[in-house]
Image (cartoon, rainbow, N blue to C red; front, side, top):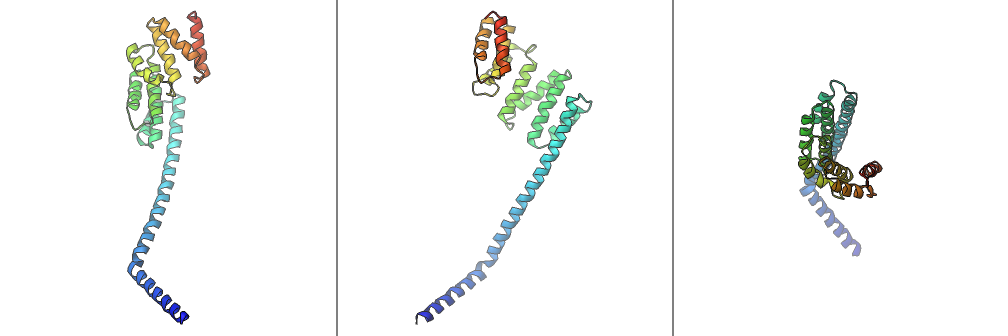
Length: 213
């Protein structure tokens, strides 16, 4: 009797399974197909993205090499990368383009590029601060001291990666304005800053010695 009931129970389960397959089999197959297609699309997109990144990297290297060699077409190559490459390479190309223009004597054009990068919230904060730092360095001898100081002070915060270079420029601006005591104070802090690059610390110590400290 137990075997008969077991067989009946198994038959009932089989009938229910067949009913479920008839009712939901198409839906399950469709979901499975969507999953397979989505996975294939994801893999295809990653392959395409990798190809794009490789092409952009090669294009950027060519443009940077042309800029290093002061080639006539360097700026046009950098502009093209800055327009068409993925966002990371666009930023690098624009930074290099600004430096190239400054080297060629177009400081105003270079500063305009750096300022746009510094104000672009989509750019990585490290690179935005680098753009500001580059613009301040290039204008350290000719720019308005108050304007330069206002833009450098946020970069001089201890947790900012560019703080040592920003402090050095702030000290130089104080010297430019005849504020020797303020410059000495900044240079002493900088010369004792173990997180600052050795070159920056050495320059701070050298300036202190020349100032008689």
